[in-house]
Length: 203
Picture 1 (cartoon, one colour):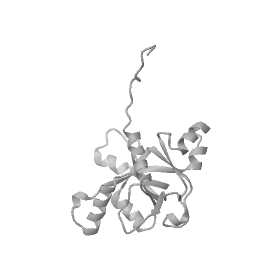
Picture 2 (cartoon, helix red, strand yellow):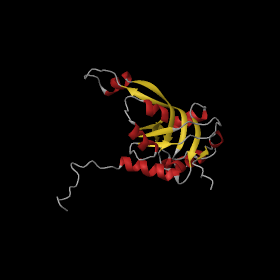
Picture 3 (spheres, one colour):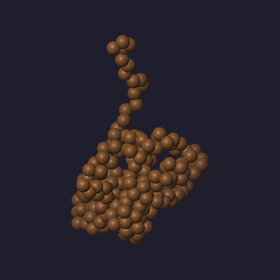
Picture 4 (cartoon, helix red, strand yellow):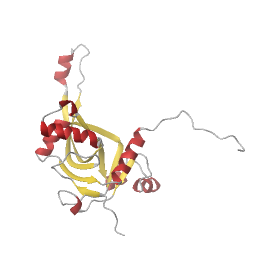
C-alpha cells in the first residue's frame, strides 16, 4: 500500500492555508527605548525602533475559514469586516537545529518523543520532497515549536509574498493537517493544576 501524501505544493492562486509552510518570512519587532517616564505618548512612540527578524521557516496556524474570508475580501474588495488584521504563525526550525540546540537541551529520550509527536511542545514534520513543494527544491525535516508563536500584519504578509521575499512552499494534507491543528490547540488549551489527583492508598 502506497504511503499517503503528507504535503502538497502551495498554490499562489488560492487563499493562504492553515498548515502552510512559508520560507523567508519577515517579522518586524518593536524595540522600545529606555525612555524617560516624563515623555508623553507621542514622544514615546517617536522613540520606538523596529528590528526585522527573518524566519527561514514558519507555519500558519490561523483557521482556514478566516483565511478564506480574508482572501475573498481582498480579491473582490468587499466585506472589509472580513479582512484579517494579522495572521498567526508558529516558529519552525529544522529538526537538526532543535536536536543540536544547547538551550533546548533535549536528550535522546526526549528527541525520540519529539520525532514521534509525543512531546507536547513540538510537532515533527518529515522532509518534503521537491515534487511536493512549490520551489521544487525540497525541504528538510522540520520541528514546529508551539510555544513560539507570532503574528504578521496581513497586508505586510501579502506584500512580502507578492514581492517574493516570503515564499509559499507546501501545505499539510488531511489528516496530517487536522493532527497538527489538534496538537497545537491541545498545547495552548492545557490547564496548569495546583496538584494532581491522588488515589487513596490501597485502592
